[in-house]
Length: 124
Image 1 (tube, rainbow, N blue to C red):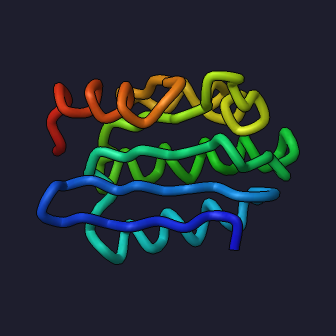
Image 2 (tube, one colour):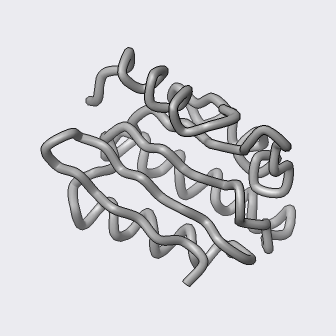
């Protein structure tokens, strides 16, 4: 699996690490797990430094629709993407294209900056 995550109910935080080629199916599994854990509204850090997108333009449209559906039903928490100092544009571009999904989202060079920003954001 290209995505591995840990849900912290105590901190209301999810940290997800990508590695290798990340597909739409990987994101479906990730979101389904967060829904099952009742963690969709938690703050999230997505570490994209080692992952690459394996999604087509159609997949991105489908992912945006899936996220919008979750937002309307369950709410989505703030989302910090760690793209690294070199900016991993493969996955970062995917998240930029999902900016239409209304929730706080920003790109960061490292996890420390992402955590600092998320500490100022509340969860739903």
